[in-house]
Length: 221
Image (cartoon, rainbow, N blue to C red; front, side):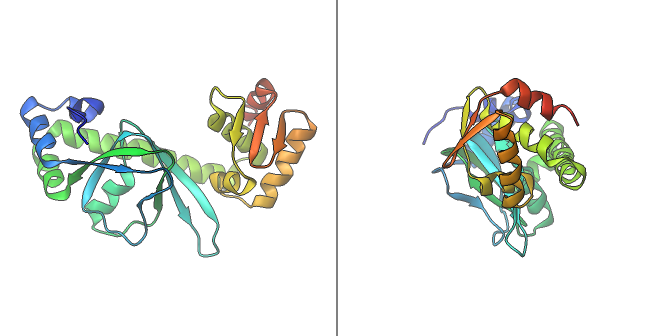
């Protein structure tokens, strides 16, 4: 697939000198993945940096007892910080990335990454600024799981997943994975939301009946 000058898609690569951008275009290559495909997993040691040109990737971790928690999402125009960290450490991933939509990504081989990180300040700043932002996101996840009220967190996540829509497609187990809790907890809170007429549930779908009430709850913590 040809996508033209992909370096214009990312803030960090867009700021690079033209000669470096041309070099990136020469050494990187484009991959495409279908919705639901694994992008990376615990058995892989990354040998390249991933730039997400189009689509969305969900990054999650699963405990020994099988409980999953969503760590963060990579959206179009971002690089994957976990790929960066594991590539720098030369260690296998300790999480899994799944394509939530069809994905188009640009893959930069490690030798080219090492050379650019060493020689180009703008590129190095782009990589580590993204790393810092994502680390803050991960610390927020830890704080939410450890100290956050589950009803507040669930209301916030329903609104986030719904976006401009009035209905979302999600099972209780998927929401439990989003928030790092048990499915039974999610079912109980959703039942309470339904009694309060904030939502309506059908198999695998949740209608957001009263977004203002959900928003008020989400901001009450």
